[in-house]
View: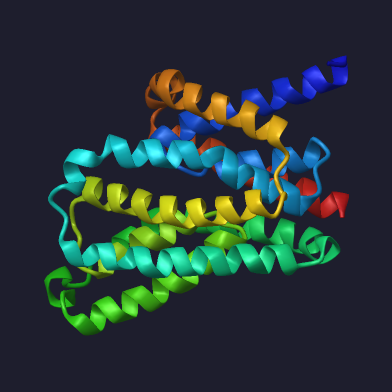
Length: 257
């Protein structure tokens, strides 16, 4: 392995560690992994597919981490897995069909949108708490949430930055109030979206495996060992770091293109 390859792998591993630690307390790790892969030389579509496959094991770990809270959720919430799978596959197919030159131009805007969405998370949650969650248990609300989840999943299969925030908003509207149950359910839905997209990306040979390995190992290590550091920073400090990095990555890619 050449010094350049070693440097490339070290950067991918290091960013994976940081993303894993931040995901443990604040989410938003893909706002770091995806742009970094572009700066390491991958084309934008390969970088997106590689990032999706690399972070999926960490999402799966998040489901396991909230298994106790998930035992008590309403069974109707699991219907949201259906549009998650369909939308995730649809978004992945659309990404495969998008010319790289077009996706390159979209990437800075997608990262900027995801960063703004990440910034607005607390505002979303405060606004949604004003509604009466108990009134939203009807079949009509569930059908509406499934349609919304289909659109979120389509976006998630295509790009995915910030989709967790959209899903938490939908779960709040459906009447969920326990934040730990909501995060656990969000992890199930995100895991479904990423799983079907990752399988498609792998089948279509869209993934750069050396970076998948480095980032996956880094994300798992970051989630396990780095979470303590991130918790000492506090959720607000971790969120600020993600927001600053997101804006910086978006600006750098606007300049690059």
